[in-house]
Length: 281
Ligand SMILES: [Zn+2]
Image (cartoon, rainbow, N blue to C red; front, side, top):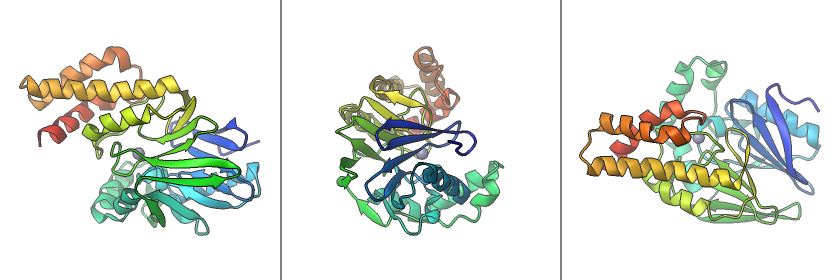
């Protein structure tokens, strides 16, 4: 099976696939009796079309559902390529996608990065979920129970988890990755601590995050420990009277022994400074 260059499709269990994209954004694919559910539509329309092509390698069944793990561009700006599908997301995910200020902030970042997709991003028609929920939603899809779960704010205000309880499989979006530091600069680091504690309770032998490889449950616990350690450090630094820059350096330094080898560790210092501002404001 030849898929889009840079991607690899891993079958997690019968009819459940992780489409991993090296260095970019992952998507999930669930094949039901008559149709398909995909998790995340990816960064710009052409990436959504590549995903659709790769789904067609697996099955002729139509894509009935697109689930947005959260509002971020690299997960949801392919939504417009799925006009016949129901797009599902958290209520706050929809709100964030309709927020003109947030949209502009992201558009500026993506366009000014001069990446291969920056030009295409200018023409994206942002298409928010048309079916939303606040706490949880159950789908019975292909003889399988699919739980969409909200556990509180974390990476965004509307992160959801896709849990397959019978298969012990979880899709975590960007909240918890296997050995990767999530982007935090528009997130809710204080709430993230509690959300991660709840996430760690969901039974999941294996999980796919929005970025990086398929992980095992121990990696979710590591991701939780990362946020707990970071926020514990920030709180201690504030209690100690450290200023923002000193705290950012000290907390990053303290975390480097355990987490220094993670993807994106170079963004930790800025993230600590951001968390410091969030807590002290
Ligand atoms: Zn994200």
